[in-house]
Each structure stands twice: as structure tokens, then as C-alpha cells.
Length: 394
Image 1: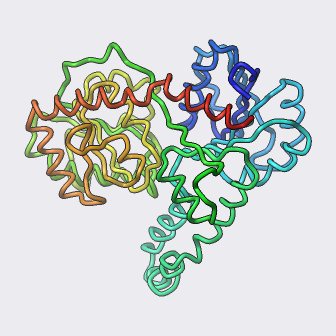
Image 2 (image 1 turned 180 degrees about the horizontal axis):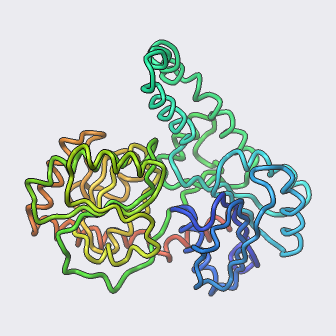
Image 3 (image 1 turned 90 degrees about the horizontal axis):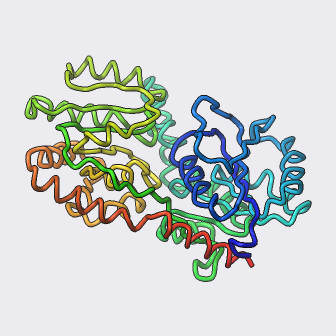
């Protein structure tokens, strides 16, 4: 199977449009359109008002049920009717386990799972949320300290996730990951040899930007979902509290929405922060990238971080906690292509950010290096990775 043999590809998404994974699918569809490949997107939750208008070869198919085997007749009928060669899961391992056997049984469609986050991210989400809820009462804190924390520390909770990853691996033809380190981690956990395995690195890519604005303002941007377990936006408010008085001509803009918005507004009042703007969901963040000198990411868990690549492509200096192999791959070496801060040291983050804010020459050099470095993740290189995958599926 090569690209010329593929008439159409289907993707499954929980919500569309949405975050990074959905952006990757949208960008991939734009790359495949000139090649004559039709893209179908099955979606549980369609956000019609956010639908992109500039890709004619995308057809959206709204699913009647959320993560439910009653969707199978629609999947199978559509795959046959539309002659879909490849079915891609950029969602979760549960969808793979639920649907794959019947799709394989009734069609000739190849199956690809694309992990757009950290390996075993569901385990970390569960752990962080349980840990946070333990703070709500004295009894829950005791339960966490003497019972639940040990189950997470010694792996009994993780084994369930390892088991379902292995089941997912067995059911698909290709198991896609964002970087090689993630593949090796999963292979070790599920007990398979990495060499000659089903794992393939399929990087997220970024569209080139030949119209970036080089004359920047003294603005810092945080762009992302306001969620607790992974993005941890409260970090940036506490960091900004250490910087605001020292740098009176700088402003912090927070773009994004999510369940932590009210908590962040209250923290802003508690810390008496002045030059910080909550802008909510911004459909087109380009004007903010144009003005921003610095873009920061304060995630505790981050599979890749599309915002890092977008910031580099717009010639912004980028700073983030060194929280994952994906973030390291984009920003390394530190203080050259970006700034990596020891996890999760807010004092070090504030000192590093202050250094960037105070030194125009350093900031410009890092921004320029980042602009050149991010070209590694061009659409052309990503398309080659997908073509290699099609060859492997023969």
C-alpha cells in the first residue's frame, strides 16, 4: 500500500474541532487533498461553529453514540461504501479495543492507533485527580497518604493501563507515537521487542509561516486548555506574581478556556495580579503570536505541545517545564532553541523568564534558532513519515 493506492482515510475523534490532535488531523487532510485522498472524520461531539472552512475533502460523520459498540454498523457500512483503506484512531485505547475486531472481521481496512499524548496518560490523569481530591478533607488526605498513594507508587493502578495498551497493540496494524522514546517506553511496559515492532514515529507537523512578525511587543502568552491534571495553568499565575513588579512594562495574556477558569480568576485576586488578561477561547490566536515575545508552557504532563511549535514558527522565544520527551525534542538544546526548566520549579521558571524578559539579544537569538529548528517538523517531512507507514502496511 502506498499513497497512490489510497482513495480515502477515516479518523475517529471525540470532539471536532478540538485541540492538538484535531489540529493535526485537519493539517494532514490539507496535505492529502492535493494527492487526491478523501478524508472522513467520525466524531462523537461535533462543534459546528468551530468547523474549518478551507478543506473541501473533509466529510464529517456524526456518531449516534459515545464510545458504544452500537456505532459499529455505521463504521462498517461507511468503510465499505466509501472504500476507506485506512482507519486511524487518534483517540484512546478503549476505542481500539471496542471497535477493531468487528471492523477487521467485516472489512479489509488497515487500522492505525495514533497516540497524541504521553504513554499511559490516563494513568497520570487519574493519579493527579485523585491526589487533588484528597485535599478536600482530612479523611481523604489520610486515605491518600496511607492507601491510594502506595497503589500508584508501586504500580498496581498502572497495570490495568498496561494491559489495555497491550490489547490495543495486538489489534492494530500500526501503533503511532510522537517520538522514539515514547515507543521504547511502551514496548518495555507491554513486553514486546521494540525492533521490528508495530511502532512508528509520526511527528506532529507545523505549517510554515513566511509572514511572521519580527518586531515584537513586551507580551507573554500562555495558550492552552485550562485543565488541572496536565496543563496546570496555576503555575503561570504564581510565576507571574514573582515577575510583575520587577517588569512593569510587560503583560501576560492567557488564551484558552476550561474547568480551571474560575479558580484562576480567584487566584488572580488573591495574588493581586494586575497586568494579566484572561481572553478565553480565541479562534484565531495569530495576532497574539504576532505580538508575543515569549510563549510559555507550564504543563506537568505534555505529550508534544503544538503551541510550542506554533510559537517557534512565529519567532517567539519559548519556555517550558522539562516534563516529557516530546517537549525536550522540540526545545532542545535548552537556551538555544528554547528554555527547559527543571520540573516543576516555579522559582527557576521565574528566574529564567526574567532573564529572557531582560535580555533582548538573548530572546531574539532563541526566537531565531527556534524558527529554524521547527522546520524539522515540516508538512513535507510528516508526509514522508506517513508514506513510509503506508509502505510498511503492504
